[in-house]
Image (cartoon, rainbow, N blue to C red; front, side):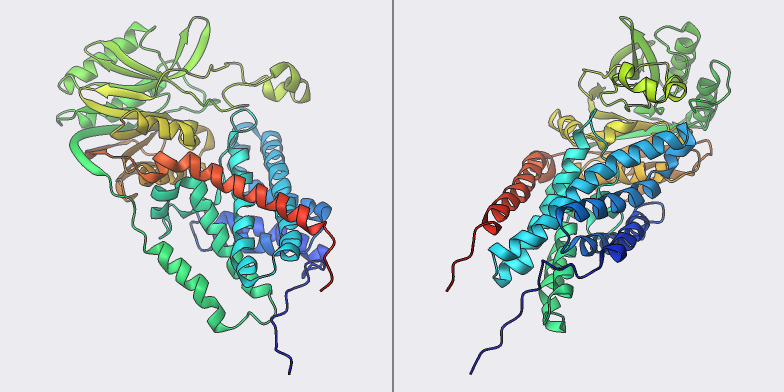
Length: 515
């Protein structure tokens, strides 16, 4: 009597025709985006990932590349539509297309994994665990490379960032953002594998992924320890801080000063203004210096941390100044200025393609080289200026240097009432959980928040309203596994995915021996 065996699906034939796969991939982008703020329906992240994976299964390298490009383009055109408000459609299309090229290459590798691995490793463990792990590793590898290259990369849109308010968020303190992306894609890939495998679609088959999800959700955030407290105020002036706003010199400074008057009378340890909190550099403008010193004296000589544009040795910097007793006691220059936003890399090469557009970006910010921590009367504050918050290495370095609290200064005025601010706020929330630190996210126009080490919102100022935050925040010590080992975890995931794919490709080309 012959024994029944579970039939391995034929990977040489895609379960979804090419036209249908392209349609599904195009629809997956908006679905995946809906998992992110501001829609924030985080379960849709898994649906979007599943749609992309399903459209890639069984394809050849070329069609996998095409389907991956369509999925990436539909996602980024939706996810960063806010870019059109700043410089128009051309940068939005260009950036979306560039990121879609990465998406396409990642899709092609995932397609090859789905084709090769079942031909080399045929066990149930390989089918339902190893293959999903390789697929998740390749997805994460694509994110990791796009995060840092070219021109410092563009880390927006990592699937882990969609989970800032989901039960999966605590896992980021253990694995970092790349590790969390791996887990999300792995869980999705396991379920997809169950759905497409003949004979596997039964209730008992879902016990394993259900158990995996339950185990993941049971993991609490890594505990850090409180080591004192500090009373911090942060002011959102709601001034005309956009690049193209019509204003007079000093308008932003005046808006911030007006909104700061409500803080006077409170006992605080630090007053924080946002990126570009003053449009008049107090190191070069005496009126700005006097106004800030008078404000500090009215607050009991509390130090003021404000963003401004500084000019030194012929270079412009996006700078955060720490002012106390009428002088600059420390400063930090933004390490990660935005390419094609705050400077034009390789301008001679790129400007002929869009001379009128790139000609608008006249001021070239120089990347800073100073460390991102400041000693504020004994409190060690880690400073992050806008786009710095997406840089994994910079965040880890800030904690390695002893930061007890994170101050994230930003200027979202160029993006109006779009969801750019909500997306950046989600990144800041994930950084608070990842590092186990309280975080002050202060914007020129909002939405500004104080966030606890566990990611919960302590206080907030609505978008496009002047106001202030004031809270005694815990100063934390201790290093989470994500900070200590995040880079190594990411490297292991990337090496796993690429080496497994190479091994599978080599094995798939060898002729099978006859039994």
